[in-house]
Image (cartoon, rainbow, N blue to C red; front, top):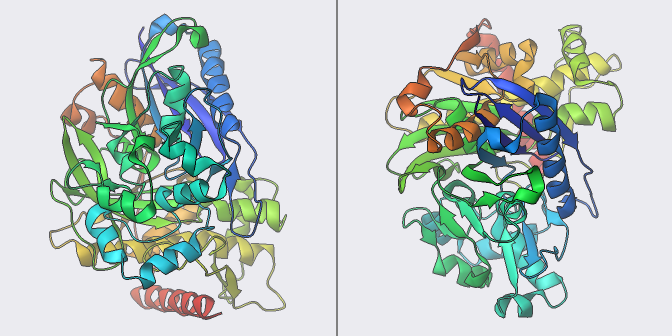
Length: 494
């Protein structure tokens, strides 16, 4: 039986998932790794951790399923986007820790570029906004702050990559320096209309183009994983950034279809078809996927803190020991209290894009306790999602789907998903397979290998687990959302 090996390299862990020829999960292996916070608002990973945990989980899942490399038709990769790495082309040794997508160290640099009136040019070329979130300013920081890095980059000695590129470099033994269009589109260095690295952006950020990888379709030949890793060579046939992979895994192939993924952050994407839509509400215009040289575009809204707010309850406040405890606590909260949490721990994402805002909580009383904190944490994700969907519907002039497809760890919470349906006033559909990010990467590789069906055939396999229907009165919905908007305004004014 042939298999597809999906690598899902995330912000807090690396996972390897084997899918069988029927696109069913055969086995999963997962390994967490350390987060590093060297300064306020800074977030880093050890570059070696990203690679070693991927290699270990790939071997682990093969061993668990009793599968040999010869049984695997291809590898699909999906990854945390925007996280930035710089390494030596000869040795593969990183020059610095990976700078994570959540990192805000380039806030002042972005603010200076905005003051110089350059954001319009950034948006025109890349579809993005001037924010520390994206890779370009992170790479500029590395070149300016790592001793000798700029001179070595200009001499052609160094390579830049997002996590997919770093993994492929190691899987192929340094033979391939490549990425896909979805990851390239998140660097702030790629012209999403021309489908090429932007001379203007590279000049603005002082990035030598010799650093940059070759850009390919999402389903393409990305090289061969070397035989000494898994026993035989395995072709790498699919790559997409995690949110685009989830869009694919949710079969959002028609313009107007919406999905929202709840992992460390929350990311909502709307397929807008063959033409990019310029947002009037500070959403991002990005590439949803690229097949046969033709990009399909999306509007995207990014929330930096979603599942991470539950981690904060566990690791910061220490009021839970496991994420599963959050729902019963929230259900036991006092309905008379209206506690609102704005989880801007690393700034606010769309549609606010305030890198300097920090978290705040409102409405506390003497009776506020773990139950109210848990409910406020789960509700904060629903409120932020409504912010995104309201902005998307204002930008998208054609008719959008009235149902939101959801996935990711937090989507398993019935409480959180029911509140989401209530606060957005629309249906929320949860699929039977929540591994949609890995599924998207697996489908890309599997259809390239001739194992899996085309888009139309894949869409027919999407299977509903549960629909959540709004049950909240419109008056209550409007009052609660107005309270959220006041809280966000107050947090930004602090």
